[in-house]
Image (cartoon, rainbow, N blue to C red; front, side):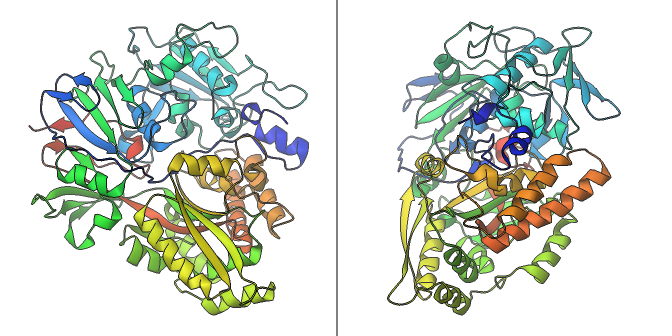
Length: 608
């Protein structure tokens, strides 16, 4: 079996005709949880965190994480909680300012692009790392070599495949270490990046934290470097980046914090520290916020009342700004609701779940009902896997396609059609299909599961509901142990292929290393397997930032969506409206459609 983390998808697909490819779970999200409670107060200017034994000196911006942190290594992180901290500690060439879906310069002070879109030359900002070392082009070459070649990397395909930086491969299609098309330019302040072919979202990819700068040689997990520290020390206790905050501490499953870097080349942080309490249980998280232990937080759907929202303005990005409350503690909170580039969905292990069963799920699922009744309007119903704002032709084109072609009665619960498709497949009252539904610990998803279970019972399906913490759910998915499951995906870069790669059948094989999704879509279990495979190959073969290539990609995107409708590999549920709340002690800019995990916090101020 090839090492798929070091293998170019273009090469591997062409060589094998459709085996699993280089991929790791990316952009996934979900609330999960082991109950955590706290009795401590918060909000002091001088704060000692007694529950962690770690003292933070100065002002503290208190927040909550609803999932466990797994690593501080930018090339190893695949979960949102880790990414939130990594975003503060590490800087990239580009960034999404306040998480708006348009990239701006970060460590790149300037750049030029060749006429054929294959050579990018970056002039680097005059910046230093938290250890005082200067940021250089050689650092980027080292850091990106780790991304491509380190055994710790979960994102090798980002650089070898998605962006397609020039590199060599051996006879089996594996990346040959040390062959990336990266050069130091006229000085160490100039980085030259050579691509094998154009890619339409190159700059957007370079804003992803997997491409963050690291001091050259700090770790010894690639050839020619012995490392200045042990890997576990870097990944858990002493990550060195060039971001606006330095790592302060991380106690597994409990809390983590970062402290401002006074020599930051950009806007030096206005707060001395940012601290996150890890609370996976919905109720405990709500209590923590109502006790004013957190300054800025989300509200679990079970405790959320849409009637308490007062929208005062809506900007050009669709962000609703206003107030919420009064809440349990008598306070009125500041509020922002943002339509994020996200999709929440039900996935099926197609090897274990027959097509008729998957179609029955699609017939009974009424996305409009779920968004309105279960998720309390915190999003928009979704029949497409691509968020409507980045669908070819925009939201209107997405709506038109659903209206004309969606085969499962959009906006309705069609139990009769579900029963018929099951009976046509040989199921009936004395031959019911047994299926295991697995979800992360989230009250709203459990309510939705209960509704589906009751509806499916009338279509000869007996659904058992099981809850698992988020990391366990992902591990079981990677190992092919799930049947039906719930997950979400937030954009890594703002283009349909970032979402539709999850529906590229060769990348869904859980028998291979690092499947990007867990559906195991094959010709044996899906009539539209070849349509989806060929369409994604069209995306791969037409990556240039040109109108002609974009047109080919747009047609392929639609083909992938309709193939998924036919075979129901994944059943879209809703696009999230991310809502965040904060007390008057905080001044913070609203985040954008890339989600709050992509927002740096150096411009936050506290009024206490």
